[in-house]
Length: 166
Image (cartoon, rainbow, N blue to C red; front, side):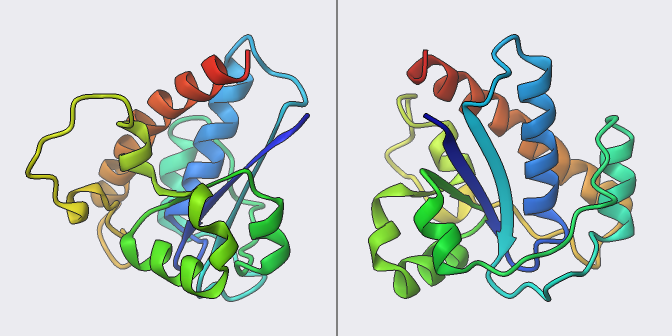
């Protein structure tokens, strides 16, 4: 059975496109690569058909990940239904999807929060600390910081998913 993971951000031109690229590369580099995973991304306010930002393309290319042919798509009901796991960047994305697609409530998580499930989490948990900030309009260095943050969290998530699906 194939597990579909949907990454969601606002425009599907920065964070979710980078997360999709990073996660696909991680799967390719793992010895677990097979047809068990379908990795996709979308945006809650995406302009259908536009390309990732030049900064996102460049930062991913620095990691040997090519997202230059990625095309932004809008979050739609069929994608949400198809997804087994929906990983979002912010509470706004989570709230939008849960409001619009109430059936998705149990399969949607902030990336940083999901990466830490099962780990010790501070009692003073602030959900904003689990958001991944939008790099749109920021410097290339900020994109690198976001890419690093995504990669660190996605590594934990990949380990959990592979462990659960073995």
